[in-house]
Length: 574
Image 1 (cartoon, rainbow, N blue to C red):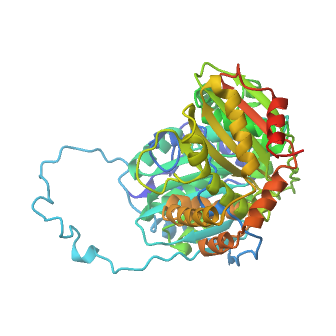
Image 2 (cartoon, rainbow, N blue to C red):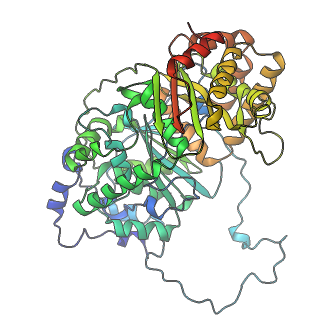
């Protein structure tokens, strides 16, 4: 069945005029987009398999791309040159001829013809000669364009048959305030629900038929709607993703259903110690401001869970100027054409210039008693400048030197067995279950620290060991530096072999700095890091008080002032 026949009608019993009044677009702009009305398809994170590249829409996760190039911005540079993509009015019937066909109402049946590939040896192609294409070398060059409304477009075509698409919005919990705490978590839970042109039921059915994998991930500085599909289905997925930000309806019964899922997500978080420690680190390091805003919707913030609050937040932050669309394994001109068609009849109101408050690092201490049989201890310091600071590469090299992992290790070489935490902590103390260095960066601030999982009766010993490791961070050997540089460069190139990571990497770099740094540039910056650079960034990190988080069995963990005293005794801070 041709996709042009899929969306000729709106929901039964709802007039087009009333539908427009009820959807978000009544505030954002005109919804009369015939292309979206007829092509728009949506994919639900609920139907996405948990083993896919994207997490399910109702699973709350925050990803830090420490192993990708996006975490290593060496320095600011010129912005890419964007090719202008003007809006063009087109004949809708001709446009619909370009929409790929798929059997929306296909019902599987028993195969009575047998295996048509039986008897074909594995060294022979099952494709017909006409289906075999000439080899085209992979192209890692990124092409850039911009719609007249300010939406930035970037793509890379490696020639693969599966495409990764992502719509990045420069929003997140950092931009919340006392009137809407938790709103980004609410938006994530409503991703791929009913839009002005598609019900949630048809959304789920469409994603199943297309065989795509879609979801929404929200962080402190970004909201990402993403999908993986066959490259031939890109024209269907583009309006599918943009419909989330242009035409959501926020139906009462869907709001109620998602509200229940918010509560469930909060309860699930309590059984994820690593995520709880990360959340507590942020809320303590930047107490009651910006990056310290909670990622998850709390019981108290459920009072803000209504369409008006969500619409108002999206009006403030979901303008095309704050968005980037990235595609991997797609034709750039085709991607631009379908994005232009998705936005051509969307008349957004002029966005108001938003003021982004700088993060204020406070440090501090928090303890949370739980039934866990272990003590989770994390100690962190602020890294000045964050993503756009001049020392990101040095901090990333430092993290690789410190390394870490679990007490039980499987697999072969290349896991960092010669890092400091493996050699000096895990191999020397049987009461340490895991120890690792973490390096989390945002636009203008970040944190670097150590996280240990230990026997609670040895908590005091753990604090002493952590203090000793912090005290030795400023002094590295040439051998350690050389090994860490090679490991870091290897990690970058291996991660960028994955199309999903490439898509995320390009999108986040453009959101944060409006520039994409090539892997070769990052490697040159890594090679330039010297022993003096490590000493300098470590000294800068210790100028502010530490952030200490203890989770699980907290009964024997030393007091915050005792932790600071142990750090001072090791030569850390004042």
